[in-house]
Figure (cartoon, rainbow, N blue to C red):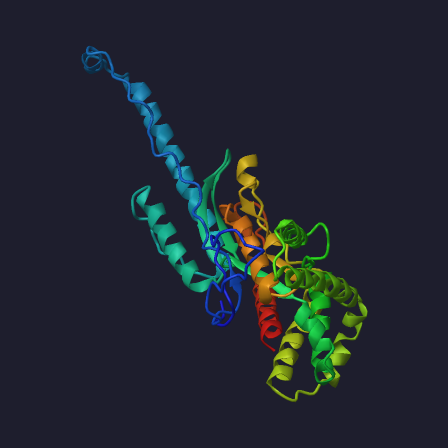
Length: 385
């Protein structure tokens, strides 16, 4: 993560509508962050209950002899299974190595299962050094074969990617900044229509109800000197948010995107930052005209209902918002943190590749790497112009 935006951590207590929210972290970080990820569910460490055998059982076992043919048959069967497991493993490893262009260590001469364990360790070390988004490899076995899977994951770092629109509204009203503001407007239209970033004034969005809940708290609290100020901020977030959505939703911003870039002239550092950002957004719009931020959102296929309820979906930490500053901005962040701290897992962009007889996926997370960096830079510009 870049090193200059305000960060916010989960677990600061419930927001108090009647008082000004405290700053939680220095403004030397780029983005607001959630709490560090919670650890996954641990396995039950208790073993099965030990059952004591009858005192004569040992003597009975010592007096028992196995038939030679039966013992030989079991040994041969075990050896066949081991040989097949090793063969399947090295075939799968060969596919994985070719896909990632790595050279596995020669471990066939070592005994089973050490040879497989050593090969897995070496492969993980190479992938960790070479593949930026690589997360883990797993050795799986189904009814037909043993094979490897590889997981590539974009780690969001428990960060809130909330893009403020009120600063863009002010930028559009500044006669000296209209050119760069229109560039950023085109960027936002790309994020809204193509990347499918949620908007906080839509009733089906997570942030919509966070704003509504905060408004209810203010209205139900005892009237204080600051109450009118808080209500004004909430009304402003609603009013500007609705008007900015009408501007952002206009697809003419995409049609004029290239023209705006070609006619743009940078006069200072802010202009240059906006231009570089807009160039990247336009390049992504051309290369990924139909890709959304949710295209590789991880799913909990193996999770039961309780576990699925424990996952923070991506639409909860990625969204357009009103403003990230002031009483309202601080309290919205606190509301979100209080809500999301109850969850144990984060939904993130993930690609699972299976190295078996099926076709190997050529998908990657290049789009996600560029999109999250784009949103991060846009948030920084809007928060600091």
